[in-house]
Length: 120
Image (cartoon, rainbow, N blue to C red):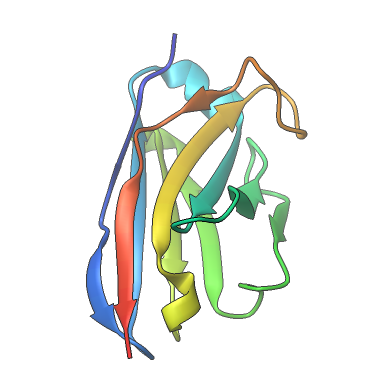
């Protein structure tokens, strides 16, 4: 069982930046694909970014490509999401997810989420 704890959310003005962190409780996290999802009020959960276990591969949704960067520090059991040029439409609860497979699975581990609010 891997427990994921996100932090770094908050209130920021449009155009600003935030860095989210996700710390895992187990070192087995280092063998997992790590992803960030988000969910805005009244909307479905949306994929944001993913990073392979070795950090050799990253994938982004079109909506964040060029503005967000996912990275990981396996020595710290941590994955990050650097968010720049934030827009009002980036407002959502951001979730950290870890899984053995590249595609999402019912066996994935989810964090509790951290709120990001971007004001105009």
